[in-house]
Image 1 (cartoon, helix red, strand yellow):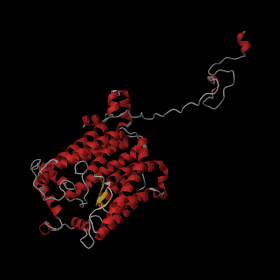
Image 2 (spheres, helix red, strand yellow; image 1 turned 90 degrees about the vertical axis):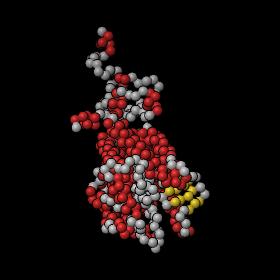
Image 3 (cartoon, helix red, strand yellow; image 1 turned 180 degrees about the vertical axis):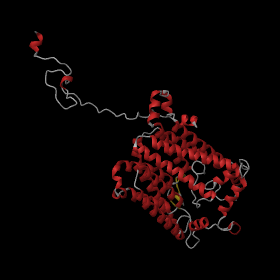
Image 4 (cartoon, helix red, strand yellow; image 1 turned 45 degrees about the horizontal axis):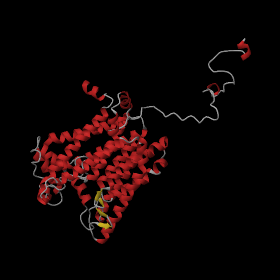
Length: 470
């Protein structure tokens, strides 16, 4: 424990913990995506590496986003919040309008020009985008900037209600209509943001009540065709909740209402303590629905066993600890709030996904960060990690250590510049001098008392000039 405390006391411990945990999770994710999709891809197209190649391309793009985000200062993030929020809201409006048109036309997708909408995704000129993932990152930046700008006025309900709550409510409606799981993750993000800002407990109570009412409303509208529901069909969202609170007999529903739940439990049972071996699982052979995405943790349990699941959970725990450590150690309020919000977002999404797979929480359809197959989610997640890395380098001890022994110039150009020193303020520029510079003896003193003409400051000579010459 003493050695561990010594390692954690090092100035750049947060930065290296963040890089190691996120990098290992990304490596595990690429490996498990290949394991979960290779059989299906080979059976369909004869190319076993089709899905993992696509995921690797998005991983490279995400690493580029990580590199760019860790180079940006906090002022740039504060300036990006509003444009990103406007962009994400616009994309969500386009998505929902196109989906509403598709519902009226009795189709599963709608297309206008180069833009096509399918449930949760927009296809813009062949590029697949999930607007809800961008909305998470945008809400982190905009919400942290807004709360820092309001400052102590957050104690008043009116300050919280304008404009934070209306914008959050709009995002909840636009996202939750099609994706309840992402809406719950967004709610957790807002709670983490307000908790880091020190908002009073009664605000959290009110948010909890409003959140539960919103979830209940979204569950109810699934019967009217919300999300992937169909009018007149069974409410799939209500069925998931009912299955969680009152689990049915697997023998009676394993081929009907609880196929995913049942096959996921079989995968966990089949894996045991040490698993059947990487790539040797059998439930991914089109038995387990969404084995490469929502239920990829069940494939980890089958092939790597309890040991593999424990490694993944520990890595997410290290990531959560590191994010909260960064939020506690930085001295900038914006960095503190943004770090807490990103950590809450990633941790809550992982908890909801893993809890749904193992049966501790209802199934929501959320992907597992870093590991599930999905390009937009991976790129945005790595961008959030890049922002955390920028904040980790800006910790006071880390900034002093980097300035004391700065890396080589080419490293700073290719990787990341030096962070600003803590407590350092830019000196205001001196006003331009008029004709002839003003001598220092005539400058105004700090106590706002002007020095008499002809008397030099800091010297105790008495008498006139003629007396001194004598």
